[in-house]
Amino acid sequence: MGAVVVDDNPSKVKAPDGGWGWAVLFGCFVITGFSYAFPKAVSVFFKELIREFGIGYSDTAWISSILLAMLYGTGPLCSICVNRFGCRPVMMVGGLFASLGMVCASFCTNIIAIYLTAGVVTGLGLALNFQPSLIMLNRYFDKRRPLANGLAAAGSPVFLCALSPLGQILQYEFGWRGGFLILGGLLLNCCACGALMRPLEPPKNEKETKEVEKPKPKKLLDFSVFKDRGFVIYTVAASIMVLGLFVPPVFVVSYAKDIGYQDTKAAFLLSILGFVDIFARPTCGIIAGMKWVRPRCVYLFGFAMIFNGFTDLMGSMADTYTGLVIFCIFFGISYGMVGALQFEVLMAIVGTQRFSSAIGLVLLAEAIAVLIGPPSAGKILDATGRYMFVFIIAGTEVVTSALVLTLGNFFCIKKKPEEPHGKEEVAEIGEINKLEDKAPQDEKAEPAEAEQFLKEEKEKNGDVVTNPETCV
Image 1 (cartoon, rainbow, N blue to C red):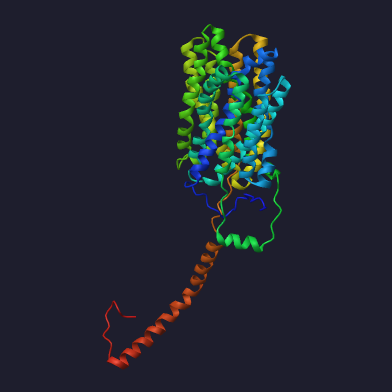
Image 2: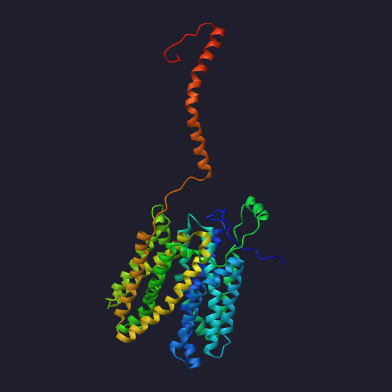
């Protein structure tokens, strides 16, 4: 038996920005789609579960909540696993967990068992796939990384548009048990995506030095990222943002029904939002990759958050179906921008070496906000009976997070003075200085050499004819 090959991300390996990286991008696209769309797609089976077990809607809603909580809350655990075993083995095991959870859930006889299987086990499996896929994407792309992040993030709306209708068909044809079983089989594709995550190999010279040098103990979770002001500001801002970011998509359908529109027209609003989101994410990735924009990507992210927050505030005043359609279009654009930029900005702040630990800690902080956000909005709705206040509070939270991010970076992050002189440049400067020191001596030596030359020429050829141009 061979030892596990640990993907320790050799520092001297240059990101290929293509080649096998496109296969890694495809795998990340699929994993992102399953991770974000699956908790929403499972909600299609809730009515059947209510009828089967005689429970309420709030009881079934815990399945999606547990899935999201596992996706976000297990961030540090995923970071430790990746730093210990590497991305590929972790994703392969995660794919097996995700599939096993849904297959076991199809045989459950009570809702608690479904919480443990479809919620905890499948959620853990998706988490073990999602985070390593982003880490590998960061390692394979550098110059084209904003575009790669945008394309990978587009997996979320694409899979949402595909999995929800598929779930309805499966429920109609096979019932919720057959549907869970087939979805479990689909989740085995995560293992195939994990197999695509081939570790980057270091150069031959680096391999030889690694064999000679003693292996340094690697931190399983690097808490030194908290010493980075940029990371702390990003974590605080992202946690505030998540409080309100997911609220409008959860309540917009109910909002339309409350105004008096049919169920089909109300559900179509999410289709509009998802369709716009599909194109917004890659487009934002292209813009973020531009030469002038990329160094200022954090401010573009701040603009996207402000755009999203103001869209929520404007949506609070929508009282017609046309107004809600316009809201969903603009929300889809801003939501797609946020989705395309959130991990790109984190990568730019912490760098490749610390990203595996940083993303785990950020997701843990966001997990708390994910659990608090929608239920808090529901309580506000129960207390006031008006959706307007829900949208206003959500928009205020997102705008606040944008101000924390942009103002924090502008005032608290000082640009380090440029230190472009490496060892080679310092050596070159030293040689130039030495030449400058020798220059006066050379100038003194030139007339003596010229006189000697003239004397030799005079002895050989007689008198030298001089003119103003050749005269020394």
